[in-house]
Length: 503
Image (cartoon, rainbow, N blue to C red; front, side, top):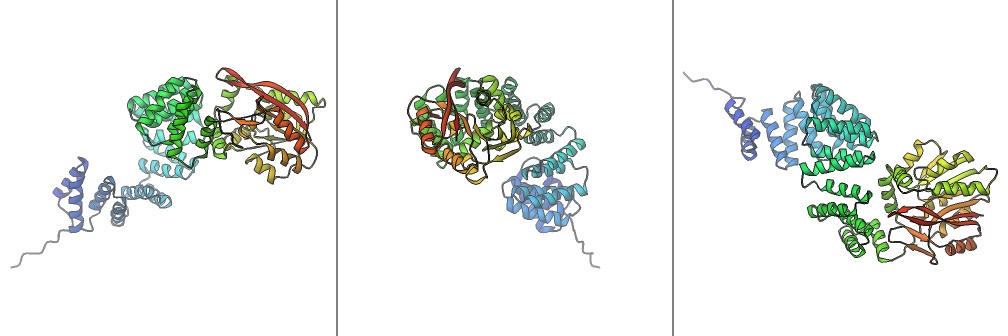
């Protein structure tokens, strides 16, 4: 009698146990070899394909891992973890829409799958769908309250939404659950810095570095904060540590160059800016400061330099400028206008380089219409939140004056021409394109030298003679000029000029 033929459709339990043991103990080569063997002998066995996909991903072979993961999903269409793993790979390959579909399938199959909710939130955030991401993180935390990574990532999302206090609470919860979470300490430092709580921010950066001594971003951001407080020696040390850890990153050399410049170590500052340019040769913002340090006067600061400068400065702009640096130019400009206009009815006013709306705060009550234009989106967001402008535009000043219909009684600009050297085009456009006669009121950094100059600070100064020459050329009447203190720099006031022109 013949023995019956036995068809083994699955690997033995011993094989599966060995495969799991290899994977869990980090013996990935053995796990790959055994999973390949099992998939060849039992090509319909889903678990072996799933393990093979994970091992291939862990060893950096993403494309091969994707094939194995797709096979795992095909064989186990009701396996939520397989769909989640496939989504992770699709995200890594930049295929976010497909990843989103796979994460949602995993959640559909397993609604309490906290990791899938959190992973879905990550790709929603990458697509700037921040409100949806927040909802997914909240669901992940509801399902798994001790999920430190979800608390941390929700903090990042809330920070991007501008809800800093809520972001801080998320980081604190993440740290409570995982005290050695260096990234959470670092991002809490960033948040506390934006909130103006600098001592606490410093402590968070230091703790991040203590937990992760090679945390290069933490050294750099600590340096930025120390520099803003005038603690230049400490900032220099922090930047140099960042450079030691990552010597090929141009921004670190630029930051160190700024600190050295502020310490009047000009030769060292130039060398660091030269290195930044070597590493990132197309950077106009680095070239601008290098020109300033070497005494070369250009016509204007590059757009990217001004945008980045003020986007980075937007959060603490008013607190720093008004409270710490005693900036009162908007008040002085409005006082000068009111003194020359007893009726105090200014009509339609354009605020050139409006920033966060400091001059708008002062002048709105005298205007029938107040509009603003600025290069920095983040500064405009601050101005918009004040609800004092009838219209705001995100444009370069010359672009705006060249393309928009101009029908204003006053053109006002406070502390803006420090980033524009050659003012000829601005003078020409206002005079030639405005529909009626008007007034042009502005401030400059003042110099007694004849002309305009790019100073070592990266800002421009203008002489009275230069402004007078533009008035003669384009048909303006200089009705008032005075020298004033603009604001402090290195505990000394910067000398400025206030101008009132009729045209």
